Amino acid sequence: MPVLLLKLRGVPDDEANEIRTVLRENGIKYYETSAGNWGISLPAIWLRDKTQLPEANALLERYEAQRLSNAKQEYVRLKREGNSRSLLDVIQQEPIRVVIYIGIIAVILYFSTVPFLNFAE
Image 1 (cartoon, one colour):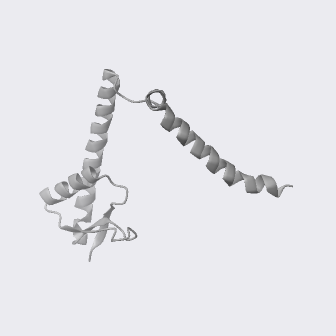
Image 2 (cartoon, helix red, strand yellow; image 1 turned 45 degrees about the vertical axis):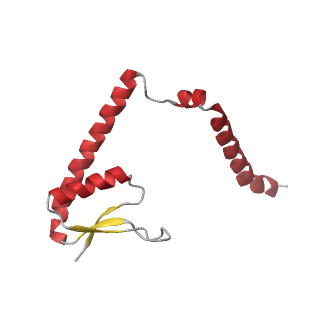
Image 3 (cartoon, rainbow, N blue to C red; image 1 turned 60 degrees about the vertical axis):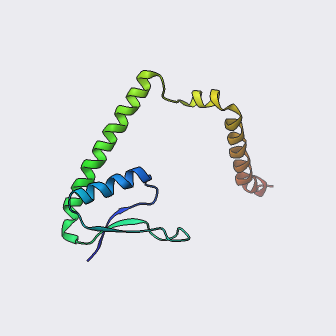
């Protein structure tokens, strides 16, 4: 009986491709379901054989630990080279975009709170 291994909603394509490769290289039989035409179904990786679940979970844990380690090393390298972007860098590089986003947030907050503030009158 098939068993759900991993939901793919919100998973970057490169990560999903790497997971597929890890499963294939280790002989784990799986299939995928897509989000469908309207994007409302469950995109996921399913195992065909329920008995392979512990092995697949162990492989995923090792893969995720390695991916996390690589991301941390990349961040440290970028920070050391002075190429990591901070909030101040974003504000300096794209001030118009930041002002527009702040304006949009202010409008949303205004319309979200006005009904409650007028309710007291």
